[in-house]
Image 1: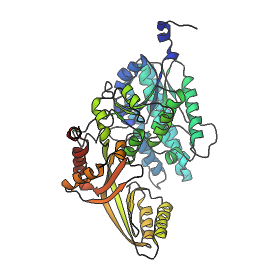
Image 2 (image 1 turned 60 degrees about the vertical axis):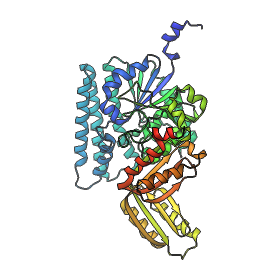
Image 3 (image 1 turned 120 degrees about the vertical axis):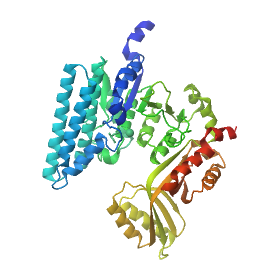
Image 4 (image 1 turned 90 degrees about the vertical axis):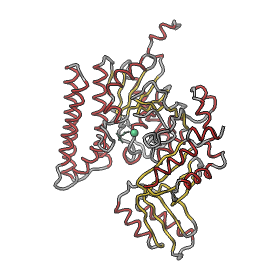
Length: 495
Ligand code: ASP
Ligand code: MG
């Protein structure tokens, strides 16, 4: 059927899909902007799908997901009733938000009833766990998922209140087949399911719970925190979306954390590998599993700021000169082709140094170290070895008892010393691979700032040079590296 341009414009099914993921703080603090400005402005020329995380206040630590996981722990703590207090608090926080944001009385009453119902369900679930004294990984998932349910109920109601026809889509039962592992077959299946469920919403704006059900091995274990990014990515793939937008409270990805380094520059684009490295090493950009899926489908990811929707944000896309030009990259970013991309710090690192007692030849020594780490679930962020000496940097999120046991085992191999309060400083950049002298400049900058280095490591990917320094020196170290290698002055120097 031939359609005139006007008819084309009026037929929403011809418009491109845009998937918008909103993080906890965005829905927690900026929902008014989202519902009055951001969503309506995209609806003019797109079909919009929204994916939300659980609400957070000032910090993620106090956010709903953390509270829910805390409640799960308390339910198993003999004599504790804290989990019931947490449920009460979550109930009153969500009711308060509902009241503040929804004007229409009918919509508000329905929303309040829904919030009450979800919190009752949470309470019964926790009480059941208390009685059977057990919370399986699957039950823990279900408890966490209530956060997204509560948040999406509010978002849907607020959109309706502003006259946007929206519909909540709970993804708890989206996985209706058995899978053993999280492989590509699983991701392909899930993206198709997500695409289908969105299309069933017709002209309504779907608001999807970023929590997505019965994942093999459990969502929190197999995918981990930040799972809503992956959910949004799979939705984008399932719809063949034009763009995946990850909305945060910053303008995009910077050459360094702009709160710590005031002259940090906003990057117009970075590659998926760089985004993943920055996330692993302390700058939470986006869940690392997200990239592979969207990039396979050739969908750009754009990081945007709810506080500045007009800003162009940062685009995550594999490097391809043609696409970079199409995406209208600013010239300062084209200049960075000879520079690293960004510097990041990961705090609260502990270093283990193992010095062999030489009763093992080197290969047995390393094998035993790795076997011990594996046995106690110790995740190593960075490692550097010689034949008889191994230095490892570990994140702080591990269970102290496991670390103690691992150390006791390692002591059978040689002497072990443990350094606390360390930080990993990583310089990340795709172009470092082809540029000579970056490491030289990096360590010169550290030396001139008087920073002592504990471990040095350059990964096989060659897009990351990392070192471990004392936590106290980390900020000075980051500033020195930024000034020497990433600042506007550094750019001018290479011109
Ligand atoms: N709300 C969950 C979390 O805090 C999921 C997410 O934010 O993506 O991990
Ligand atoms: Mg997140």
